[in-house]
Image (cartoon, rainbow, N blue to C red; front, side, top):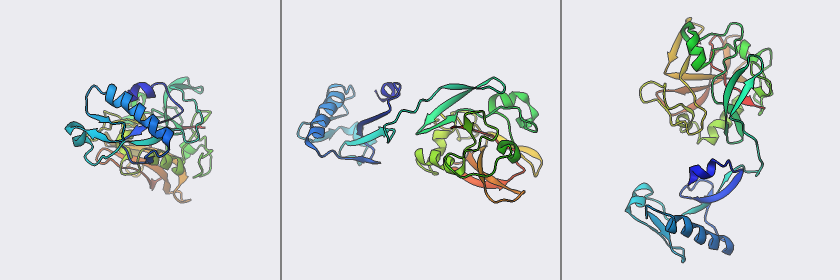
Length: 281
């Protein structure tokens, strides 16, 4: 039912949940009456599993199947989903980079619209992993700090207002904008699986990709080596935020690993070449 409802792309809506996060018990008479009727329609009458039902007196009953899944649950809760300001923000599935005609997938996550694949723009000095053009087709190109910034100065604003190497209408995300994404998906300790693609990560590092971000373990070019490394192990994405104004220490970048569920923003050297994801203006 939830999948069918979300396929209609609702702007903002209320519903019942077992999740306590930002959810509350209803208190006013009208909502209580609506709660009873809605829960009865969807949980009692429409519940083919027979796992739960709620009586009109407010008592909720769970059978053993539901109790095993939600052992601490006592009551259903009322929660607001979607845009907090009830505004409509259009989200396109694809867009075209008019510089070279490449078509990219995009995805809405919270109030942000992200590229759902890595940038492949053929900027001077950019690389394909292992110098194989087929890797660029799947994993995008690798860029150094001067290239992704394209002459712009460091920014940690939200939005960053740094177009950099991104197509017109898109920009290089700041540290603050990466953190908005991470926080929306549950914080640094939890966001990784929701961001990572369901294949291409070594070991047990594949994600659920519930966000649609489809992050790949595209590795990077270690400029201090110099050599390519961590293909299948790490996904590294530039930000527009400089860690410190030094030609050696780089800007902060967004990092995902096959060995962890964490999604973090960390500093490293500017000589590396990493992937680029752009954020819609």
